[in-house]
Length: 435
Image (cartoon, rainbow, N blue to C red; front, top):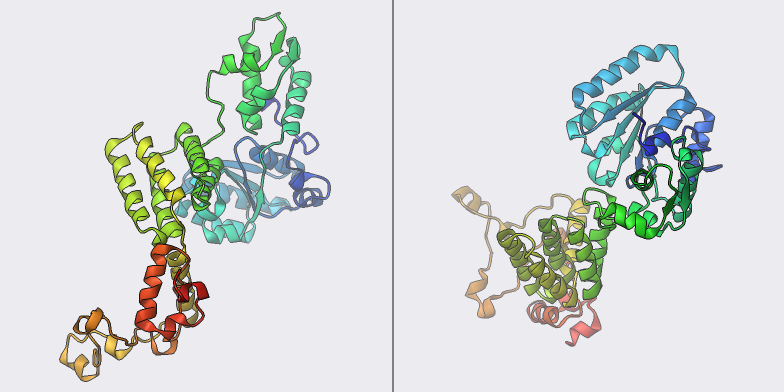
């Protein structure tokens, strides 16, 4: 049985490799390492079908070093240790360390990734990991710090066209057929920059034609053969993060049309509706916040509604919430405030709690002055009385800064009334005088 076209066309050398010239072109970083005959451990991050596995195989062939392959889907810690032991035993007879290629390394658990650390650090193996997911989220920090990270890009139109023409001209099976490439738009659109998918489409279209007849490839023919949605969205891959990022930024930028568009892309791509709802809850707090506190209530209610009514009706409350969030006034003052507070804590450490704020459940604590001098706010007019709540050394710090929204300005004016100069110093003049 013949191999699939994508496998038959897999490049064997860097000269045959298409795309990623920023890594393997003349003078590029990986090309220099390969030509020098020495590589260090690295991770290849990029969308499917851009040549991650192929590049690893080419490097191993060029360096003439043993090449071990593990799939994170089917391999466990024992498999990793077995490969490392084999690498150790053969390591005395060669200069270059064996290459351990792990496909979908983002699927490795923490314990599986931990099992690699010693071998990578000691140079027993050179690790090449391939992932479609952001390594900073999916790869443990100790392992990531021991590896270089190289980002692979989706193949450009010219790269894909070069691959198409090369396959038709050079593949032994396709050479047996009469193929006329009239139009390429649909093939490129369906492939989404994925070389493997492009070659699979070409093979499918050619094999569907009767032997002996000329295969005239047009956009209409490709669409009829595939009968599927050409949208490029992989809910388990890198596009997943790009689309949700565009969605959240559209909400933040107050563009309801764009928010609905990116939501529709996710829905059509099969995204988990709970994931969409969850991200809107975060956006309601991070980007809208005190400018419209009702946004968080609606986002949370949307999450509950999606859980209760399911799909496809769940798209309706999702859309309602997306439009509401996009049209709402925006404030990130709470988000920025907690960021400043965390920075302050990290810089100043464990500052002592002032005595009057401490709890005094025992007589000894009371004798030591715990809670002494604390003023109970509800005993005073307006349920407020000035007293110190921050640690002594930080009592003049300001962390929350109000922003220009009607709802938030009311909060600021109350703080100005309560605290006076503490909130007026350094504040925006527009806020001092009201809006």
